Amino acid sequence: MSRKKQPSVSVRLYLYIFLPILISTFLSTGVTLYYTLNMKQRDMDRMISEAAAGVASLPVTEQLLLSGDPDPDSLAVLDTFADTLTQLDVLVICDTNSRRLYHTADDRIGMTFIGGDEDAILSDGEPYISIATGTLGLQRRAFHAVTDSDGTIIGFVMASVLNSSLFQSRSQIIMTFVLLLLLMLAIGCITAEAFRYQLQSTLLGHNPEDFVNLYVERSDVLDALDEGIFAINTDGNVILMNQSAKKMLDLPPETETEGTPLVSYYPETQLPKTAVTGRAKHNINFVINNKNIISSRIPIRRNDQIIGAVSIFRNKTEVTNLAEELTGAKYMVDTLRAMNHEFMNKLHVILGSLEIGEIEQAKNYIINTSLVSGEAVSDIHHRVPSSTLAALLIGKLIRASELGITLRLKQDSYFYKKEQHFPSDYYVTLVGNLLENAMDELNSREYPVKEIELGIYSEEGHTTIICDDTGGGIPDEILEHIFDRSATTKGEGHGNGFSLMKEITDRYEGSIHIETEPGEGTSVEINLPI
Image (tube, rainbow, N blue to C red):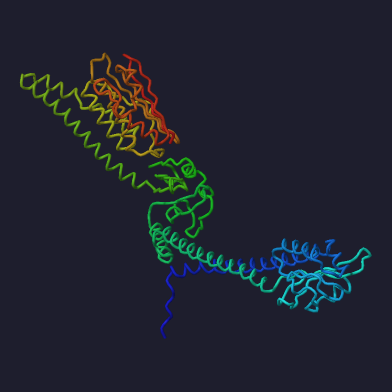
């Protein structure tokens, strides 16, 4: 037996939305119609009761009943009064014998009252409302007694509305509510369709079942990544955390983190700050549970409004080691090229001495010369454990030696790799540009003393780099725009690469301080709070 085909998700979604609208519309319309008809009935009863009471209180009514003669003047006054009661169909004045002394239809005056529901008003005089059939058909009647000055009942007044008029009034009300109901149903249909379309658009055109499958698949993919990912809303509550992130935070894989504050798992997090400021941070280095981590923090925006932030991070220990090996090899090649260049220059000196027969001079030159001081190289290797930065410094040392410049690493420098939470390539960029600027300045003209001192001070939570030279200083007009990309002092001294150094320090909320004096030299200090 074949299974009955289920409606599509779109149809079911439409019905799930429309049926509650349909039920609520019928209920609200039915209840409102019921109370409206009841209110209309009460208003009608009040109107005919007040009309009967009003006519009974008229002096002309008492005069008419006492005389027993429906004279034209009295009838004219009553006709005028009856004309003001536009919703009233019948107005009758009868004596105690139920003889009509006044009727809205003149031809019925003098006839006996029809209906048989007048006995109660003649016996006790209390006003009431009844339903009876009169000359003009079924009516809803209000009775009111008329008394003389002694309080004796001398007749009664009956004001009524024909049942046909009531039916017509109710039909109009019902028709109005039916039209309103149809309008509300049409609006409900349109609303349900618009909501279904909007929901499907929000789901990027996917049906809910497809979207659930897609969500599960993507969750599996995110959990398979080595990179840790967690995202928060503007309240700081977790909206996503993959398994790698839980592992880095030492959380059990089954931990339900969604909807809970991120700070409860990672108190030192700066991600809520990103969700507030909207400022992205890339390649930030920090430590989580003794793991060296590199992370990027990015705000999440929807329609130009920040709705949260996401952090993507990874354990960089192995990656850093490999990167340092690769970049260290690169700078080592550059260092070997510089050494080869100086070595060839010295070979040319030796060759020249041999050519002119100065053999002893050549021997002494070979004995007393070296490419760079072995002590300087050993000092760099001892104080700078990063192979990448060490290779760069040795290369700069050789180049400075070629240019007749003394380059020294300050003796109080300290640089411990275990405290290195800053990418080595950024160190290379900062130190390389500082030394290159200083050497360009010292090589641009003759100075009595050509010296550069470099100091690197790396400790937990803070790194300082200081570069001092004995050049000619930075002119004021250049210093004002030193960090602009368009600014350069090539041929005059400093400035080249300062914009790049500024970008790096700004990224890590650091600072660059420059002290310079014409003819005395320049000192550049870079502080990084990491």
